[in-house]
Amino acid sequence: MTEAALDPGLSEAVPQPAPVVPKGRDPRVDVFRGIALVMIFIDHVPDNMYSQYMLWTMGWSDAAEGFVLMSGISAGLAYGLYFGRPMRLWAGLGRVWRRVWTIYLVHILVTVCGMAVTAAVAGWYANPDLLKMNHIGYLLVEPIRFLRGIPILTQQLDYGDILPLYLVLIFAAPIALFLAWRRPWLLLAGSFVLWFLTAKYQLNLPSTTSEAGWFFNPLAWQIIFTVGIVTGVALKDGRRLVPVRRWLQILTGAFLLFGLASMRWPAFAAHLHPLLWQVERAGWPDYVIGTQKTFLPLPRLVHALALAYFLSSFGAVRRVCATIWLAPFALLGRQALPVFALGSIMVFALQTIRAEIGFTPWQDTWMLATGLAAMFALAAARTYWPKDRVAVDRAKVGA
Image (cartoon, rainbow, N blue to C red; front, top):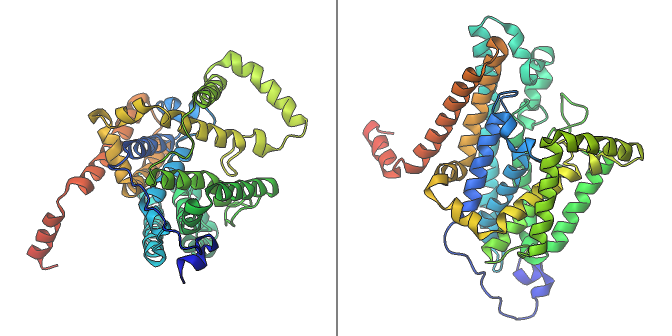
């Protein structure tokens, strides 16, 4: 099929300028994704002393929104040109869906290893009740539904449900990438309509352990991923999606301060909560005033987008992200999938250990420090281990 057939607007023989690809890798994407990975790891070990300093205590969104947004931007940067002009459709589909298959395999690995480390800790402490954590106990109640649901993604463990969301969003990404070059604002409008209908009518994908469906609902969370894709495509084209404007910086900054005050200033929150209660009694729907994650309510969505715009609108942020001091986070961000997988597996172990032995500030410190050290070590090994060394090692053993 010709390009003109795919887009009737190209039927006229008008030469299309090649996209302007900015030189160098934007350090902000890797650094912020790396920071999000660290926050997710710390947040997924509940009630530890360090979680009170994470993003979720400073506003209505948290590291999950940041991770999904950064993943969308990365998808736009990595695969955007395949769906631009000229379009290399099959090459683009091949790259995107190979990534989908990789994410699927990693998710299955994380699920199996998560159950294995939980069972190992339960066996070590001779406490079978630990197997009930994170929906693993459902295996003992409904083994057929549990095992059948793992490969088809209807059965997801608690704290192991972000990768299925990411998988679904990447699978559908070619449609968004195609429209991001040609009708970006129409794409964003359609994404918003889908988010609105999903939240209003409580649409979701099926789950064997929850009547409400997936905890991270792809039909709702697609909106922040789509914003990321359109942003990434714009960056690939050498421009910003939303121009830097002083009034927008002031507006988003004020909103972020409002969110911070509502979370960290008890006197302010004491006046805000009765007002929200009155608004709720007046019949305002939860997706407009709520903060639960599943349907990505408006306060979470707006807070995440305001934070993204505010940070990206200052050149100093990009310069700071390019410094050696933040290089470790950039290292994590460049190896996001394996690092996230390792962190998720360690989270299952740490949660189970803490449930058995309790926790103290010292225990939290050494456990989290050990986990983060392992994540940084994995990222460094994958980045700096010479590929030719791997080939030499295989040759020595006859692999």
